[in-house]
Image 1 (cartoon, rainbow, N blue to C red):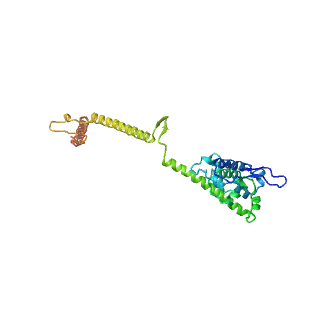
Image 2 (spheres, rainbow, N blue to C red):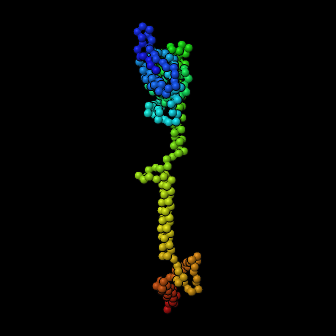
Length: 286
């Protein structure tokens, strides 16, 4: 319920007030408020406390019961999409942990405030308190756990980040799937309210109407050409009967050219002159 920030001058201990009975609802709310304030003060005088002691003071189960695992609103305001990419890169072994060190306090507060249900083990929660709330280094944290090496601390820390990334991904995927399965029934198109299916049906109807109008125009042009160049039955004799499906074949006759009268007269004249010359040559000399 209460923890004094400054230690006692004689004993060096922090004064603490505890309540055993939790049947009163206002006591639970009071404890929740105490937990949130304690999380914010762990970087000051409470930085000297052992992380195990801090974890025992926080009733994690009571706090995490308020975690909402169906909405990303609980962490989207604190962790941007660029921050998520950094976390994702570290979880995929693409970057060093220093790249995401500034996000550890945010993740730790979200977890212990019941806004991210990561299902951490006591050891993982203790390491998260040391790194994210007491701002201790990896080397200093390894001194708190004599049985663990620095590489082992980093391995546990990476598992925490992987759980965080997986938790955020699952929630975001669930939201996207829900939007796909249940799209909004009403959308605003061109400033008008209406269902999306109605707009699609209207567009399809307008397209078909334009196609029909274009087909009618082409048909009218073809009929006009047929009327202008068609051959009617009155152009033939009475013995020719035409119908709409009558096919007429016209045969072209090629007439050979004949020499003109003038050319033939010249040829006759040349022939007669030639005969006269021959007769003169044959006439006997007296």
